[in-house]
Length: 96
Image 1 (cartoon, rainbow, N blue to C red):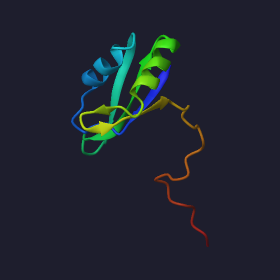
Image 2: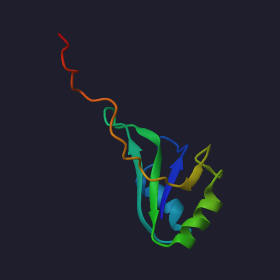
Image 3: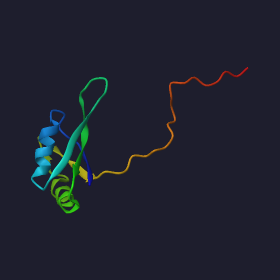
């Protein structure tokens, strides 16, 4: 199960996020999302757990719990929308 985790302390690292969730079961991956241009944490991330029961236990236990002075938001991650992108670097065709 893929889990969305928000309101993370900006100093938290991937490995620390993994350790928080490993208390509830096997963690396949834990990743904090960083800004591409600055490399700074965006304050949210994703954790993948192999067992759905363990993942649900982690969600229930960690949602609204305090970690490094911040109350976490933990929930099942929604699938990424595959809509067509609205904005591109292309210029619109010239109108004569």
